[in-house]
Each structure stands twice: as structure tokens, then as C-alpha cells.
Amino acid sequence: MPIVAWHGVRASQVSVARFREAAELGITVNYTRFSDTETACKALEYAGQAGVKLIVECDALYSDTRREAAVKKLMRYPALEAYFCKDEPLCSEFPTIARMMNAIQAVDPDHYCYANLFPAGPAEHLQALGVATYREYVQRYLNEVPATFLSFDEYPLVTNPGSSVRLIKDTWYEDLEIVADEARKANKKFWAFALTCPHVVYPVPTLSDLRLQLYSDLAYGAQVLQYFTYWTPTVSGDWNYRMAPIAEDGTRTATYDLVKTVTSEIQRLSGVFLGARVVSVRHTGTSVPKGTVRLTDLPEPVRRLETEGSGAVVSQLENQGYTFLVIVNRDPNTAMGLRFEAESRVRQVLKNGSIVPADDITEMTVDPGDAVIYMW
Figure 1: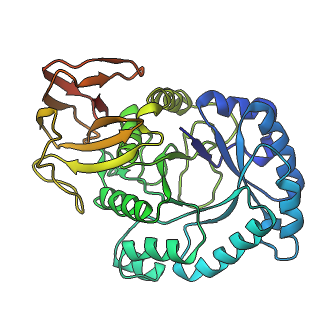
Figure 2: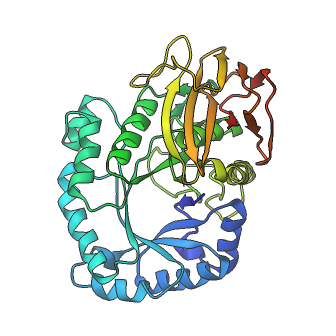
């Protein structure tokens, strides 16, 4: 499973050792902005020695007069993954992004161009984007920009001042529904995020926070996972960025080991998710998130699926001739009771990737944000 570090190893810190440190956490692709092409080339050389790929952003890529020469330099490095073009564009910026992507691809058709979309928001946010609905924003991007995949960011867990209780933004699952649907209709993969750097109202991540974001992304079919951020940004103002896996001074924080743990867990389950086709995504609970569909019918070998508490994401996937049922506790704060009954041919996929028989009747407690996976 590709894992992208946003604001990865800093340009001023590039070395083989630093990229190996990122790889140790589980990073496979590093995104960093470089001011000049020469520094980017040096980073590509070091990253290649560490087995890490780079999404490169540098000033020359934005220049009509310097772009071609920069691409011709960068494209020679085996560690090059892609060219960074834009983060969170307005619709009015789509033509510029398209021209930039087309110009780069004309020189180097073997490496893709990267752009990432805004999440949904209130009416004034959509108006600023230049659309009436979030779906219109995603559709226009896919229609107007020669993107090879669809990426969007949404950091769904927030807290109120003085409280550790996680609240889920009501736009999150609806965004996942829209992005997954539009990517599928366009025959493109979609990429999603987990927040690994707390700031403003976003709390220091726990294992439950990370699991909920990543397993929900995967349940909807995400094929690349992105961490915002790897290195703690140095930004003026009231953002209060802190406690990313790597601190501003380059030392590891407690978040490093936490993210390493969940990344390793995800990679052991890559046989379930990587390359999977989503058959359906449904939700259980007294109420279901806005824009989602309630679970009413069970797949044929499942006799009973009951959840307690806030409810679950229930995703049916197909991969390599098998069907997988992924059940994610949608509550980031409280464990969920699960009662599951199925035919004897149904097996359970454990967190270490091993496959064991599933009991005919199973009652269990699922930790906050965690997932249980069955297959047949």
C-alpha cells in the first residue's frame, strides 16, 4: 500500500539517513517543496538509496521558461514518483493546472502530476470554490484537469477547548461517498488522508484516531494513503502545528511510533485493500452519517450483523477472487459491541494478516475506530 508523507523530509535536512528514517516509519513516497532543481536532484539521489520515491515541487516547475529544463533533469532519477502541481485549487485555477500538467507530460509522459482537492464545507466555502455543490467541484476537476487519480483531504476529527472527546465532522463520510463514486465513474483511483500533525482544533492523534481515518478511507476504496504531515511545519500565525512524527527540530515525537504501528498494521492487510473493488459501503447505527446509505441487506453467507453504540461502516470488497467484509467502528471515543453470524465457509482476517476460521456465532468488542475483517 503506497504511503505518502506530506511535508516529508525537509529540503534543508535531506540525507540518506533521513529518508531511511521515513522508510522505517513506513513511508514509501515523500512530498517536499524544494526551492531549486539542484536541491531536488540531490534529494532524489539520497531518496533512491533509501528506497523512497519523491513527489517533487520546485520553483522551476511553475515557470513557463524554466519548466522543460527542470523536468528533463528530474525525470532521469529512478526515485522520481511525480511532479507536484497544486494543493486545494479553486475552480478558476483548473485551466492553469491543466496547462501545467500537459506541459510536463509532453516532456515526461512516464511520471504523473499531483494535485489535491479541498474537502466540502459550508455554502460560503463552496461559493469561494466556484460551485454550488461539492460533487460539482469534484466533477469539474475530473472534466477540466488531465488528472490520473483523484486526491482530496479531509481531517474529520476535532475537539472542543478543554475536552478530549472527538467529534466527527458531518461532511466527512459524505465526502468519501462523493469522491469514491466520482473516481469510480471516471475509472480513476482515489487517494485519501489521515491527520498526523495536530493543529488548531485538531487533536494529537491517538491510535484510535488514526485507525478510524485509515480504515474508513480503505473501506471506501482508497488506494493510496497520505499523512499530513510527517515533519512538523514551521508556520507563523495561529495554526499551532505540533507533534507530527518528526518535530520542527528534527527529533522524533511520540507520534512517530504511533504512526509506525498503524502503518505496519495496514501493510499486513494490503492483500485485502490494495487493488480491491468496492461492491458496496453501508452504515449501521441509530442514525447514519449524512449522505450515506443504511445497511439493510446482508451478503448471502452472513446471517446476522448487529452493532451497538454509534454504529459501523460496513464495506463489501472484492479482491483476487475473494469477497471481504470490512466492519469499522465509526465511534472514535467508545468501543462497539458486534454480533456476527455466518456460514462456516466465512473466515476472519486477523490484524497480522493471517486467516482463521470464523465461529458460526461471534460476539466481540471492537475498539474505537478499529476494524474487523471477514472473507469468503
